[in-house]
Image (cartoon, rainbow, N blue to C red; front, side):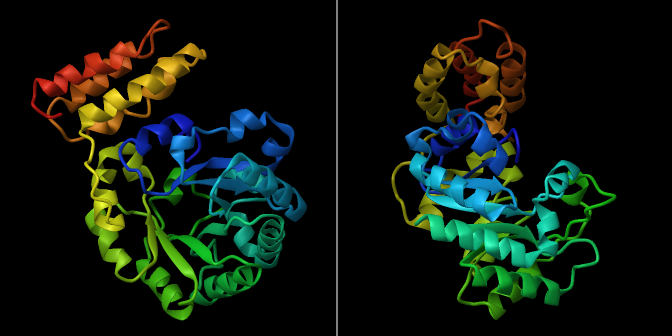
Length: 315
């Protein structure tokens, strides 16, 4: 979820749920090795537990990135073998690596040998014509032999040619039965489902058979759906912040970031969905969209926006 799950969004979500595991945007190995590491890898301690999602296919480069990430304090390294975009394919990482399970296994083994962190793999259930259950089972078996014990399976295949990344999230049908079968056949592995999960009720149904559920775009567009996740899935009975309390808790962070030269829009764009489906929610989004983009916009813009919801009694 490039440009979506950045550090601002992660800090915001952590104010809603203290326990769910958060993932970074995918960061390429080359960017880490040769780019601005603090910019790419820096995060607020409050974001933890936090997994770094890596893109790459060179075992030694990925091992060095894993060592760097461990030093930064990440809790998990996740290798992306699921992104189908042309740009990712040209860099020889993402979903195209499903055709090279031996190489993925080498990458996992190199990272696992370099750090003490868990190395996980996020992938699809198939690509192009390589989409049989036997193909997926072979991939899981070979990659797990390299030291991966956790697979995040997007329950759709990917077409590497002919479909855009957006179309690849919508057109190939969801096959939850394939993911369930992998769990049945590889019961010692941790199998986490990704794709099409829109609420906690749906997540709970899948958790009856699987070890975990990843919620991506639904959690971005409707972040407050995670408010009950801690109590429901982690047995954490601490009080849940109201939406208004989330905004208030975010303000000190916003003030600090503005003092560092960050524009309010860089943060506000991630919180538009906080009042999704609530009375006043449309006015909340409109106010932020109109005022957070101004050059001198301050944290007060967020509080001003909540008044539309308070007037509708939806705090």
